[in-house]
Length: 458
Image (cartoon, rainbow, N blue to C red; front, side):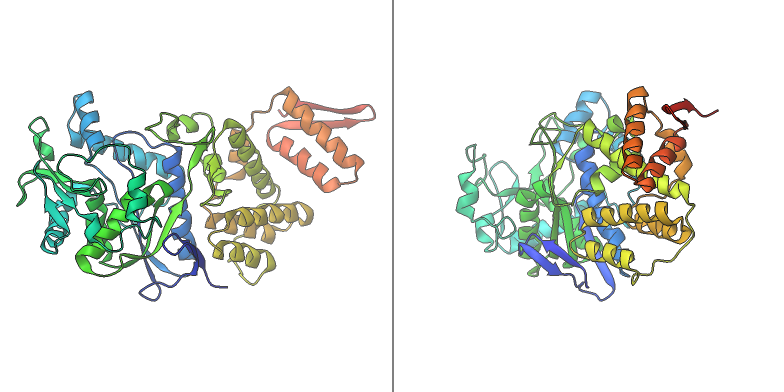
């Protein structure tokens, strides 16, 4: 079975085929570095990490670009509030971002361009758009994109211009011919710091947000490339404007496949900094280990909503412990994955169908059960090898289980009761698994005619 992925542009699953055989060129919108990354950012970056990992596993060479927006109104405002330069703020936030993503096992992209390094390329594209009558200079000095002059505008979001206009909440901004027109070049304001004033034929200023990704993707991947990804919230207006800019300037499709991950929700509302209902990755890692957070995200399909709560993270940690308990019980042999093997074939079929991680994770649990039953180091090795495709199960089992040992009396007694029920049902495999799970956390069970007691291992 070949790899299929959901394409937002066509609104359906499509068989994946890169422009250049054997080589995938992929661009994903990164973060605006004015603050620490939150769990919503983690989900987007883990989704793209899963995609590029599976493409590599499938035999492709991948050139992966994830940009960094290091010039923006929020950045200027935050730097001013902090009394620091924009560069000092963005350097600090970029370093923090990589500390967080490294902890989560997110592989670094091939290129991580900073927007401020690509201003000349942005100016070049803006000049092309102006030559083609798609850009105009407004009275306030800004250069805007005239969306009504691009026939395909709205094709990604699936809405007409009139439908998009229906959602307006504000009057037409000064200088724009249409509220949907996007700013390509922002004229410098007297109060802004000198470090955000670049020279241009339209006067000093700085780029708008949308043109940044157009320039960086084109410079590093070409005028047409294979995959463009990001969060579902970027479909409109950001990605819609990227398409209008690139295709308006170069007259060819920007990306073959548009891939968007779902939101992280809290109380049925999208987690975001603007709403103030977010948890930074660092907040979460004070209580949970990084692999538990990664597993929590991976086990839900990347396009589905993900509901964040401590209860769900606790459940994720318990599930991950069960997998590591199997690896601890039977040390894994070093194996090369045989994709014809039934469990491996099932895992591959799941991942080949739009990165079906829920089913792929289910395969891991079936393998863990087989490890517990058979004691096979080969099966344990396959469990670890398939886990690696998801960025999971590569740590030391004993260290993971010891670090996660935090059972209180109630939790221990609950597991003892579960074990007793398993024994009564003659499910001795389950009973042994619970005993081993407790033992891995330093809890020794003692059976007697009157029942089961426990004590901490010495």
